[in-house]
Length: 213
Image (cartoon, rainbow, N blue to C red; front, side):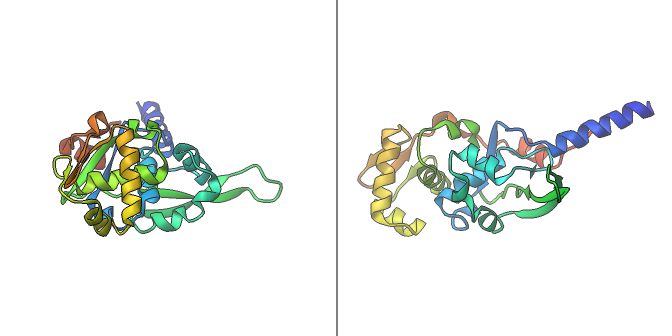
């Protein structure tokens, strides 16, 4: 029995250290002004790889591969993420003639905010749009009520702090991708299976895991 207990502990330790993509991730509405459009999408991608304790162990080069960007584009990634999550350093062994290890980041994904959040499917990463447009769409989902935004392009631009021309350009790309419908006085978002119903009971279970030995 004691040996089995040790095996279970070792197995759980391995699981906690491994970053495997989950099926969905939540994004708090409070993040809408904390991150720009590209970083908000990058946060979503990072959050997809949380473990049962909401920790993520990914290198910058891994994150770049997930988002489809060049690694150099993410040079300020950690600085941006520090505004919305807790990041700790841990030693990781490396094959180097002088140094035995390097310091890597452990990202602690924040708990969902009951004041407002959305849940997005991992399938959103498969949509053929730029990182900027995807982040913009997440912001639209965060401000929408029942997938409707009763605002004009100018009003959306003012609310999100971006230019009217950018809003117009992104809306056209999203329309062509089938993710929204355009009207003179509003936008109607059509995320379909990309937006998942918020299952609060399940979220609570994820955030407060019970480990059985």
